[in-house]
Length: 234
Image (cartoon, rainbow, N blue to C red; front, side, top):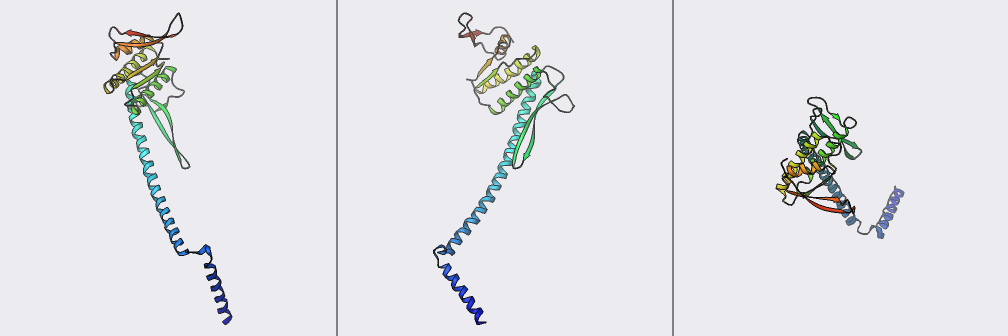
């Protein structure tokens, strides 16, 4: 019994000597501060998880609202522009994909004919339909995200379009331009095109008395700016 007590006393003495070393100075206070730091970190982590969840839901909802808005404008412009009877409307579909902790959307353009099922436009449309769909989508994106933008630029917008669809596109574009002019008096439209009839029709439809054209001089092949006066009615 005495031997066991002596062994315990030796162990106690060694522990006291160890606690007296420099690395254990103010150990109680240091343990208290580390414990507070640990609990604070855990609370911050929970708050960040709540914030991430709320932000993720807000972004997804914002995405849904914008997609609805874009598709609404796409439908309106398409039905004004497209003069065929095989496609009633087009729509952007956003397929959600989850890869690990990452979330992404795959966007595809589908077409609809009355009550038939939606079909992907890729591989099923003519060159003119593809060009027109691209223009319609870009105009819808500009209307949604660049509402107060003072300039709209189009590069060869009537390529591969037949006469009927050029007329429909002119109507849709002129409506957008007239709306923008009411919102912003300094609004400018820049069009790169070799279709002079389209330019003249667009100018008349938007009630522009004059417009400026950048051309190459036949003699010097240098750029020159000419002023054109619109006459007649659209």
